[in-house]
Figure 1 (cartoon, rainbow over the protein chains, first blue to last red):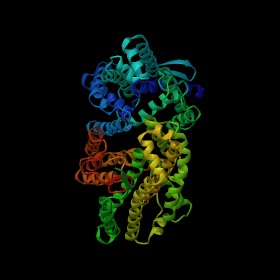
Figure 2 (figure 1 turned 90 degrees about the vertical axis):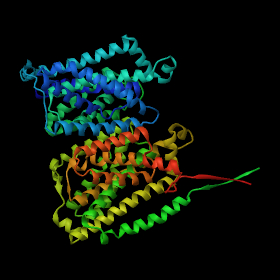
Figure 3 (figure 1 turned 135 degrees about the horizontal axis):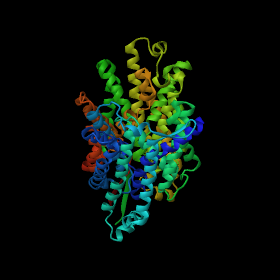
Figure 4 (figure 1 turned 135 degrees about the vertical axis):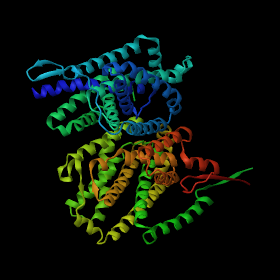
Amino acid sequence: MDWINAIVQGILLGGLYALFAAGLSLMFGVMRFVNIAHGDFIVMAAYGALLAVTFTGVHPLLSMIVVVPGLALMGYFGQRILLNRTLGDDILPPLLVTFGFSIIIQNVLLEVFSADSQKLQAGALETASIQIAEGLNIGLMPLLIFLSALGVIGGLQAFFYRTSLGRVLRATSDDQDTVRLMGADNAKIFGYATAIASAVVGIAGVYLAMRTNFDPSVGPARLLFAFEAVIIGGLGNLWGTLAGGIILGVAQTIGAQIDPGLQILAGHIAFLIVLVVKPQGLFPKMKG
Amino acid sequence: MSMSYTVQRSTKASRVAMTVGVLIVIGLALAPYWASRGDLRMMVEIFYYLALAQMWSLLAGYGGLVSVGQQAFVGLGGYMLFALAAFGGVNPILALVLAGVITALVAIPTAFVAFRLTGAYFAIGTWVIAEVFRLGFAQVSALGGGSGMSLPASIVRSIAESRSGREHLVYWIALAIALGSILMVFLLLRSRWGLAMTAIRDSETASESLGVETYVTKFLVYVAAAGMTGLVGALIFLQKLRISPDAAFSVQDWTALVIFIVVIGGIGSIEGPIIGVIVFFLLREIAADWGSWYLIVLGGIAVATMLFAPRGIWGLISDKWDINLFPVGRRLITEKD
């Protein structure tokens, strides 16, 4: 039963990882852009939620009302003012600029909030659970996060395939230059893509703050989990990213079941195995 | 009217630089006789950062391999030194060299995995691999697990009897490694591999169509840079005499700072990392008690450099005066008859 429990908890943890990964997957899909500061943006959103809760005393879930639009706005203007300048054939500028952001964000958070570990108290939601069988309980919070991941990915999928902006974004993903010839403004489209990705980062950040302890240094590890989920699932496939998150989550909880020190290592090794065996990921939709 | 031409490699500037460079090196080699203990320590640091910066610039600036995981090889080199010296009974200086060789060997299978990814994904992939190394070494209880280990006192004494003797030896090794890293990049760039790398940097597809073995070239550059990085890692922890997974595989110390140095100084040149490392240490002296603001400012400068002067300080200098201190390129001199 321990093992079944580990797998079930891993699947639920995978939901959180899919939320981490969805924004990264979306930005790469549309712009071929990898944001090294992605994890630090998630942590920044978590601190945003902490501020909102501290100042207003609302339930952490409600902090999303401020955090999500806040992040979306930051994403839009950050992309238009700074990141659009780095896009081009050379991969160095976007990588190094976002790498610089990563270090800057970590140290600003450190200066403002100190290195103390933080966590948002979610009250009854934290301890409530549903008993499935003897020795197998599903926590309400992990379940809520998992369902949110399904909702976010389902929503993004619907947005991409049912709306006209979604169609433009998909077309941009296929061929940027042709889309521009058709009269679309790439700079604006990239801004929208980053705004949407950042809104998802906002949701992920609030859940991170509710589910685990966090401090200014935990961003890079979140980036790596997000990246692994994207690669395991296959580039350009959002449902694949969810599957990748679940595989990563299950690998980690199984590793932790063997030895608590092996949790993160087991996830990384699962990723490397997929990379060696199937470098295109398990469910690829486009070529990297 | 016919044109005759010659291909020129060295220039007046490069010959002057060579002479000045030799004088500087002689002065630096004599540093144990004129510099204070604290200065020597800092110069060792400058030398190993210079070597790391040269290796990163070689990978990213010429090989098109943007790695965020070079700390994997720094840490591995450090740990190999400790393992060989403490458990293999190998003389620490010999262990240092062996640590570099072993790191290069480990880089071969590592490259097979990392090269499954390209571009930006390669960058993050190398970071994952470095994390695997860090978490893996934290599991090895013989090497102190997560809390690490110190180099046993008997081994420290086997380097040299007196403390100053050890410090001088470490200093000369550091100087040799820094010069070695410059020489390595210089010779590599002047060889046919260097020509291949420059071609790959400018256009991978075009160079491949002209018969450049892009995969093999990148692979060799990656493994060679890893070996040198491992050697530097062994030196770093020979100076520190203590190692732990978090210190050995620190992305901030061994990759982030190195990237900032290269970006600010100028990527894809030998001069850039030299200038970058000087700027970096000057700034560090000024900002000694700024705490985390120091990294914020440094990161800000690096981001601004990347946005507004992507070829760094050396790029601005060489564009303005058209000079090259290290003759790695070729110039076409045409004369009208």
